[in-house]
Image (cartoon, rainbow, N blue to C red; front, side):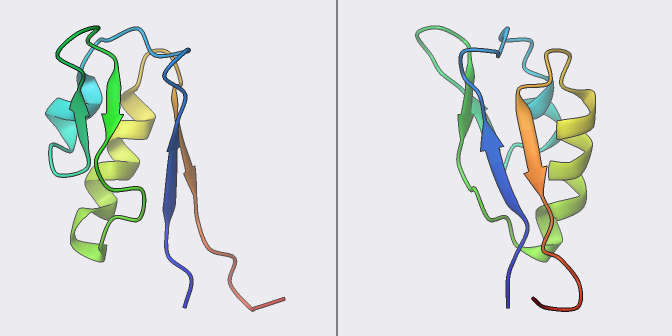
Length: 73
């Protein structure tokens, strides 16, 4: 079974911290530069809604969410 997978682009991140505030189990901020740190690239079902919201509120679009395709092939 495939799961939701996240990717972050640290070069694109502006360090707003919305991701860490929205989904602290999945994202954090680097203590040195404030940019996103991905704690869990495949969040469990209980954290997926927060991860999706975090991707949606990211002002720089640095978070990409890849959903598994339904139906196989």
